Length: 241
Image 1 (cartoon, rainbow, N blue to C red):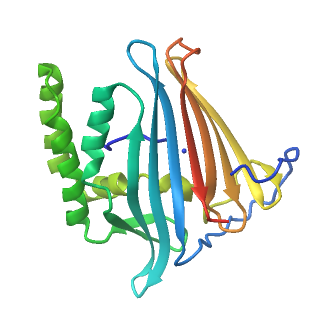
Image 2: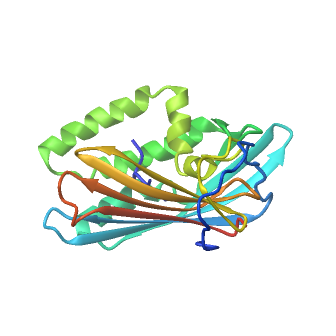
């Protein structure tokens, strides 16, 4: 249901894996400071040509009487793939650009809600309507009708997960027990390898031990047997550490 499925500052060379006490990582984000999240994806067209997309978001953590929050604003969404695919991306994201989505956070970095959620969801919905308006294939149009019905029926928890989906990976380890990891200078390197026969994914997370935030994600996903054409994603959180 998201306009794009993004699933990403190498700072220090990792040392060999160490036994680390299972004490929780902190959740100490920088307050009232603009951070930049850049997500880049490389995939493939049906013709086997590479296509690349780049999303830039501004993040700002803050605190008020209601507690801690992070405001997430889409700054830009660009691509160099097929012309129509890129045009659909622009259509789907245009309504969200400049809209600050304020995600409410617990003391342990759990996402608990969205301020003015109805307005934020309406902006997201407008993007999906714009995307549907560009579809000409009957099959795609039928799927778009189903998607719009799902958007309109989405429960509150699903709306929150969708609207805050781009910040959730950055909070994955904050306030939680330290995962098995390699240790570097103020940095944990967490590696994952999971998936099944038709979808295999390898990911490396670089996590700040000072703030608890994920500073970088590198993910490589292979679909089916086509190992020569992986989907590659890179996430970079700039200015957080």
